[in-house]
Image (cartoon, rainbow, N blue to C red):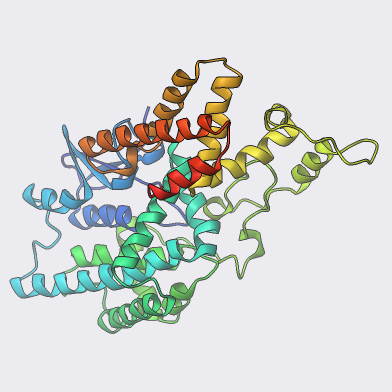
Amino acid sequence: MAATTAQVLPAGPTLRLLQYSPAWGAPSVDPRCTKAQAYLRVCGRSYEVEDASAAAPGWSPLLLPVLRDGARAVEPDGLYAHLREGGIDADAKLSAEERAESAAWTALVEERLGLALLYACWAEEDNYAAVLKPAYAQRLPLPLCLYLPWTMRRRALSQLARRGAMGEGVAYRLGGEALEALNTRLAGRGSFFASGASAVDATAFSYLTAVLRCPLPRDTLRAHLKSLPALCSYVEAFSTTFFGSFEPLIPSPETDPRLRPPPLTGRPTAFPYAFGADEGGGGEASEAAAGGGSASGDEPPRLSLWAALRRPATRGAILLPILQLAAGSSMGEEVLFRALLLHGLVSKARLPAPLAAALSSAVFGAMHIWNERSAVQRSIYAAWTFLGGLVFGAAYLGTGGGLALPVLLHFGSGG
């Protein structure tokens, strides 16, 4: 059953918001989800939150937040228009001139600061590997947690490339200009307009709190924001007013060694950024090394892949890197779906090669079903990847279990 958390707000028709769960003291790990909550709170409407990790089947985690209003599920593109049509308008008190000004400020936040935040989180390799990838993976159910963060990163990089913001200097210049403009506007103010908080305040808060709270190892944006105390005070005041508190900031890994990513030990370790957990013990690595060593001190015997997978001491050390690689490269997916799954179905389960290829291709297609937006697109994409899996499987079996040809075909197809 999906876990829900009721918000203490004035009574009204209950709305359900599907989102990524909170992180680092922010309402959600994703600023778009935080914005939806902030908008509803500015409007004073009651709602319930459903975490993506416990969501009902059929909702794409690539399209969060999703608003469930009765029997209707509204995706992000139409969420705010739907709320306004239902009389939930955070800009109801604004004049026509103020609405136009609000739209300009919203564009500044989302198009400049949002672009810089996108670069910091997804294009900076250290930030993605140490913080964003494990944070999103922890908030997704299996099997989505194994590959969806990579899919999200690929989309983010594509968006940055289309906008000409793949360079560090370009992205952070845009973000810095947006921060300075916001600081000039909000210095000494509690909101953008005298009538009180509005939709643009919800937007600004969602991106500013993401910049301020996300403990990135390379925290260029965060350092810039922390140098603007008036803007930090605005974030704190909004959080206290509409969310009831302003939790202390989590230090970045550069300033707090406890937050640095733990070393690979052969098994998944606790993610420390959200919960402040101590670094995982290195004893597991020692234990794994001891389990795979030779009592006589000679060179340990070489094991086949399947023999190594049967040994608890080496299973985790083999599977975890393969799963991580499978989420981010053609080679990894071919190792997972052809060298392991297809090979296992043929050699271990003794299935006929055509049936094994079809089954492994079906799993391959199912693992890619959330790469598209609509149900029709998902069905088409799943069928396309199923056919691709048949081709890659035939190449694998036709070359006697070689991976070179399947990897080249997969890479050439854009995988």
